[in-house]
Amino acid sequence: MLLRRHGDFIGGVDLPDEKRETLAEPVRSCTLPESLRIPLTLTSAAPAEVVVTTGQSVEAGAVLARGGDDNVDVFAPVAGVVSSADASADVAGAWGLITVPAIELSDLQPPSPPPRSADDDALSGEPADLRRQIAAGQLTCFRRPMQPVAQWLLHAQEGGRALLIANVMENQPYVTADHRILTENGQDVLRGLALLARAIEADKVVLAVDQRRTDDYRHVVPLARRYNVQLVALPHKYPIGVEEVLLKVLTGIEAPVGRGPTAVGASMIDAATCLAVCRWIHGGYRAGQRVVTVAGEQIVKPANYLVPFGTPCEHLAGLTARSLIHNGPMVALPCTPNTVVTPATDAVLALAVAEPARPTPCIRCGWCSDHCPARLNVAELNDAFELVDLPAAHRADALACMGCGICSYVCPARLPLTERAQALRRALTELAPDDPPHDHANMSPPSRGVFGRLFRRHA
Ligand code: SF4
Ligand code: SF4
Image (cartoon, rainbow, N blue to C red; front, side, top):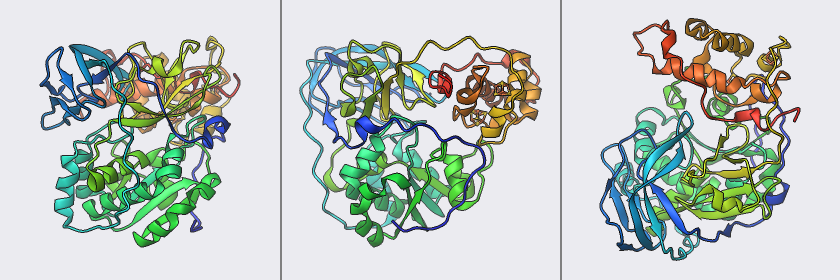
């Protein structure tokens, strides 16, 4: 790895790693559930229009529903029979789990394995043609908030061309999905990153990884040199993998609140999306599965599994597990029986934690503010929440909260601070820009995220 000095950030915490069981284990295929529930939308965009009927047999990759301007088409991840065109599924939205319409697929046939390495380093064609080819794949970005890759390309090309960052920091406990993707498919990840860089005409490209894992990524170095991708190994202090923080560490620039990296000329992408783009462009293979870390003390066989989209999370955890959560423990959402795997599901965890203790009043210790990477006075935000005082939340910069979960994790009073800060942020976000935040009736209930609440420093 090319060693270069980069910045740091104030706040943050050094979390326990808890990755031993899955870090060095190759990705396995998972057993198929009885049925899949394939969501017709993954965002607030209108659901795709169903084009199959109940009882119809479909092949893997067949179109199940047509997306509109803001959405992608929905494909069958495996071959099967449509058992309901009127089902529903819970998926991780921007503010918590959302229930969306879905197609249920039964009598499932095992999927064929993804293609072997592309072995094609050609980067030919005009960027505009490449953008069209990538958009034709109807792929979705493999991270929250989910958005069509075509939309990501458009935003990145318009405002984020100066610096493209592939973010493989993955520094939440237990989660190793991106690490396994880069370890096992590093060259294709690099090829996909190079394709995206050419498509948006990026000036500079960086691959950021955890400095403890660089030995596993040596095989990507020759391709990184060929594609002029700068490899950067960074310390793992949490939440360095959060977009705003990583951007600040790499460039020293802070993105304006709520506007993301494109506001300062940068774009961010993940390893799984790069891999999917490579496989689509070089092999015509459209991803219908993703690598998911299934781990935690209640899991009998912790591992990374290749899981078809629409698989119920409960199926992955087995009968013994309770308290399932979706994504890493610091930003997790509790799984319902209807929660399914989507492109953004990097982990399904079953942690052996006690029930959350009852919160007690704030003792003004200041730990939450000391560790907050956004430098917020979190106790003041908590006061604003308890007093239902949106103007105070606005003055305390609730909009800058990144939802990282640290404040809940460190609070000795066990207050659900992250949920409260995010509820304030959501209430402020939903107010019209020309409507000053004065209407207390707009206060939303806390999001359903568990953030650091189930995974605590003092648990
Ligand atoms: S960490 Fe908890 S108890 Fe300490 S100041 Fe913050 S809210 Fe209060
Ligand atoms: S969740 Fe928000 S308020 Fe809490 S530590 Fe993270 S950025 Fe700060």
